[in-house]
Image (cartoon, rainbow, N blue to C red; front, side, top):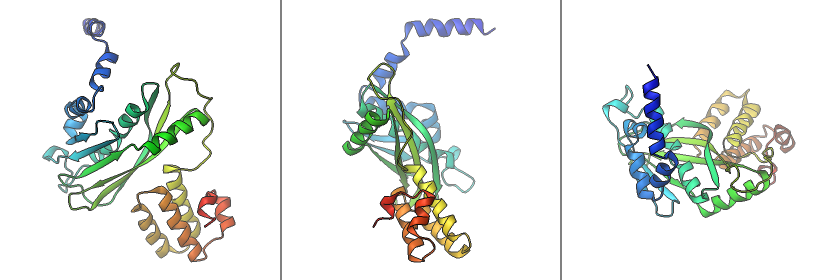
Length: 258
């Protein structure tokens, strides 16, 4: 029974080149924005891309809250908030890097801080400095796991949640020569965030009050580098550990030599 459907799909594919369709849709930021806003997963979730800059360096996503994408408390469904952090960054990176590179989200997490309300927004940026970092990492290691932080805010400025994700970027096969992939050498992004949490538990597991306070403070700091600085400073101030102990735990020297 599936044979006629498969024949139809094959006929349509022969008439329409999917790669050409994608190339056309993403030839200009406005075309990409209109495509995303008509795409079922975003349309159904109430996520709207309200702006993409002409040079693909910046974009804005807005939450339209409806009865079908609310939770039982009348706030944004958690999956919708996570989706906001996942959809645009990789597209901007690929458009700025060029067709010789491909990218996809490798892993991600989300800290829920306060209820998401109608009109909540997320600003996404791919700076020139970030592009240089990606290109340098690919040239040296053969790939780049790009750490990036997303902060969703309500209209009143309150933070809805903080997303931490790693975007895997690598050259397309045959597009450009690059060294064989190497093991990552520096803790960044989600790895650094997890290490900061480990530091808190290592230093304050026998001090529940400080443990709870410091973990609450850490989860509200968007930047993983600042998270690590905060927990290391707290541990050193309370004399809960030593630099050598933290070094053995894997904390990078840049947080210890200050």
